Length: 173
Length: 122
Image 1 (tube, rainbow over the protein chains, first blue to last red):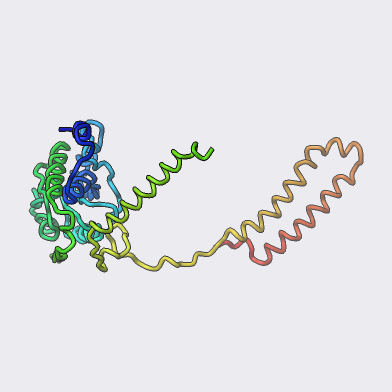
Image 2: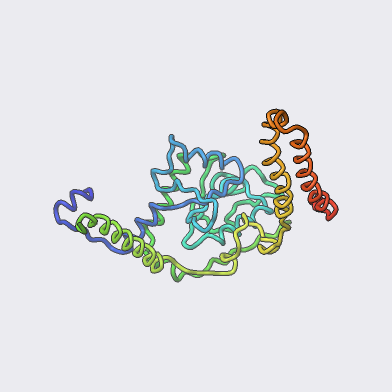
């Protein structure tokens, strides 16, 4: 039943605070485009008119962590870069979520190398792992929808009392 | 008369109530967990270096003062040069000498600035 039909019948609607806060949170996810390498090209493509990430309310890619909810880590994270990624994640306001986009970000991918972090979950709390090398833009949209489902299920004041995650700082080897 | 402005007041009231509600509700529902790392300066993920209160030398002061000399020269010499043939036919050589005196006075100021080191900008 749509909103108009509901209003026509009763004249008012009732909801819970959790539902309305979750609804507004999940439809205004502003991503932090942590585009490190080639996955960032597909991330940019997800903003174009063909895939149109604006349909999900996430077209506002903010280049400052202060205004972001969702960090899309797109690309190969080296040990040197991991400190930057972690610092930017720390500077984002709570509550915040992370998408590990692509094989390199999720597992290190084909770079079984001394310089590449074998999966960013070694230093970040990842919500969605996104397969592909690189993943197609519609894959990224799928990940965004999954994140939205997760956000929509959260309680309004759920993030108030959870402790700060203890994130390890990687040492370069 | 005042009834005509009712829509304006409605819009104004709605804007104030909506903005206030958004700010208050984000204060209620948003978790505030400040920590040193989050409050640190955003410098693209790097550690910020140095202070923001660095003094830089202002070269514009000297440039602006010296500009006055050449500006005055252009303002007076250009119309004089345009009308020179007509004035020369009428008054003769004094037209040339009077401008020469004016330029010499300006050149004295130029030489003074040069002697003071006004053109060493580095």
